[in-house]
Length: 135
Image 1 (cartoon, one colour):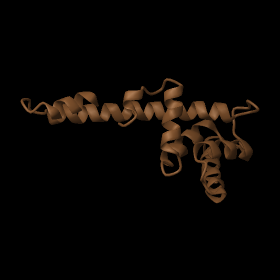
Image 2 (cartoon, helix red, strand yellow):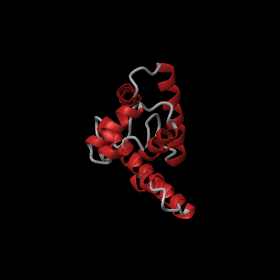
Image 3 (cartoon, rainbow, N blue to C red):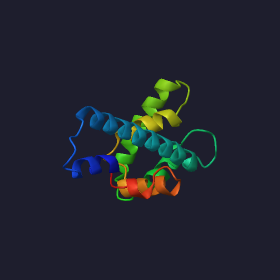
Image 4 (cartoon, rainbow, N blue to C red):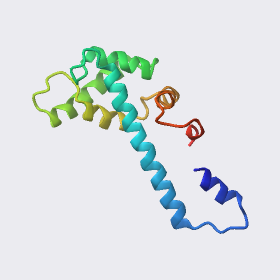
């Protein structure tokens, strides 16, 4: 996005709207991919028993790290939402969470994720550079 900023600051150049939109779309896709990678890494870290799934206890512990102020009712409803998506992917999964369902639902739960904690996690695992933090 630094390119976009430079284009907007340079008053002598006209901004090619098509190029600008393409750049915005590419940047969004890249950030979405990084978010998916970060969520997959979080899932693996939270999977204490390494069974490739998250139990309610593992999920609750992870949620407390991502959003320390979240109400337990919200965590419970989010678990049920991810669990429902997990059953759609793997009908015999039982009361556990599938990694793909976790990523899918958590990406859409932007009101749940503590943005700063998640950005710190992405930076720590080199999925985001420090200059991208505000974009």
